[in-house]
Length: 475
Image (cartoon, rainbow, N blue to C red; front, side, top):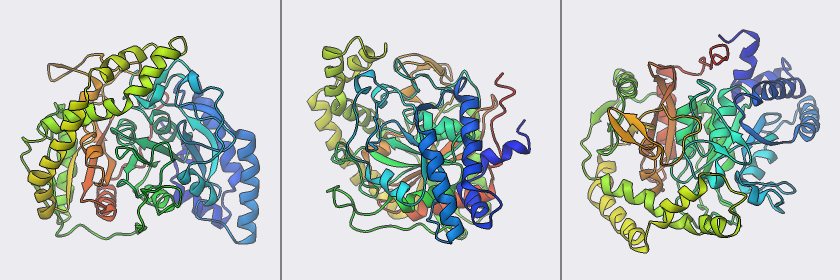
């Protein structure tokens, strides 16, 4: 079990900031504890790629001076782990691939720049699968990243390293990216809060800003921390043509949910959900009802084709990257890359065009009318978390007697297709085999605040943040 001394590792960023301001804790002392934890779990959980400990120590000293001078910034001194996809000037972002091992960026992603300008201290990058293209987290370059709750299970992908680091108490906050669920699925797997903002809310690097499936966002222990990060990351940026002109600020206190109308679907008419995930989601919905929300199950029998085409659409967009890897770097890539290429190359331009058409029909006929009636939709984030740590894309998992793949367990991609919808994934209990359950709160287009409103209510009514993985049981 977690000891009293270990509790320091699991403080939220908002709690740490209070301790910094009162002088109860110093940024340097806290950073050393986080680095100690990072080294302690690196050999088992393995969530980190490149590390910047010495530079982080210097930044922590500067943070101490700011507190002494009475001018700390919003995230002053908070240790930040950054997914190994984001550009940071003067460093490499390998995207989990040896192909990029020598590539040094000459610019910094807008959201990373904003976080560091707010005082966050980058001390490490976090692992991801090669090209961010698995719902697990392992690669030839970085090895296997494991789930702190159970080492045989994946922390998810592709932001698996970020999720594992925060869940293990080896980072206070982290960044992730999400194009088919790569923030929300790992957040669910590891018992964290993860946020996919509406497209354009958080500015993107120029390499990704014209892909409407892609988002960057926070991965945290609490809803309040996610709101704190999101408020810093969001807002228009002159170098992202698609960044939204308006900035949405999420309040730290949002009140109760009395009178809110919330729809839910257990399976979106497509997924096979295990009994304990179903049980924990229904228990979470019950607390919303008790708090005065009107919670209604809706029948969804019209999303199956859209879900399949959403996955195919991303495969089609990504095919060129995999083709280049296969043709020019076959000796450098992970063993599963040929399998990824086989899947992606089976998708046609007609599939992609059909995905655009079906998306329009589904929104017009179903989701659009639904969001006129309800404030939000809640579903599980992951239908079954029992995905092995070294799973490949086509490996079979048996769920309710059915042979499925890990792609069939992540209930996320539909809301990358409908990417103007914000989605907040939050913890919602545990399975019988001691793995976290997550639910995702889907809001109307650009209605970030409602997602956080509901998430904050659930967090207060069904607290989670006091839980932490038992490393003793992990051996």
